[in-house]
Image (cartoon, rainbow, N blue to C red; front, side, top):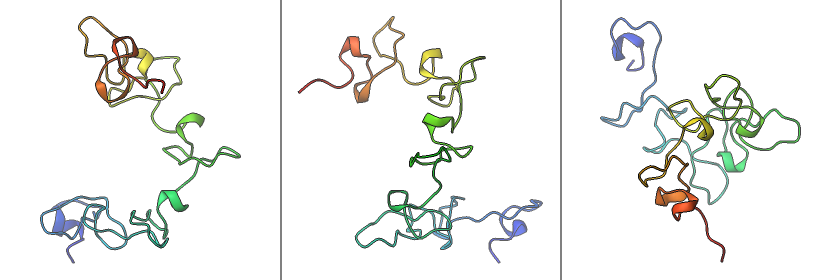
Length: 143
């Protein structure tokens, strides 16, 4: 069997499931043993082309996946059972800060996480796809 631990990585104790598509090697696969990119199981709602979440027949938009445990909240669980607004996901690593981490640095935007304005000498957070802060023309404009 190609999914045994020894066949994939000699000496490894736990089995890993990799995508069956030749040359892929991604580990995130569903029941069809294919990753999202190579046609994993699709949502059962007619006309929907999104991938179903692990263990269910629907995509996140149609009720698949885990939801926030906070009473009355219908947002997606991003970690620890809650959405970002209710304490899920990674938190800022600055002592005493409970905001969400903005990127791989582990810091919130207030403590230096996330993308910064491209203008020299500006330390503000960039807004939108322009890569600059609001003062330098980033963000949304009124219509």
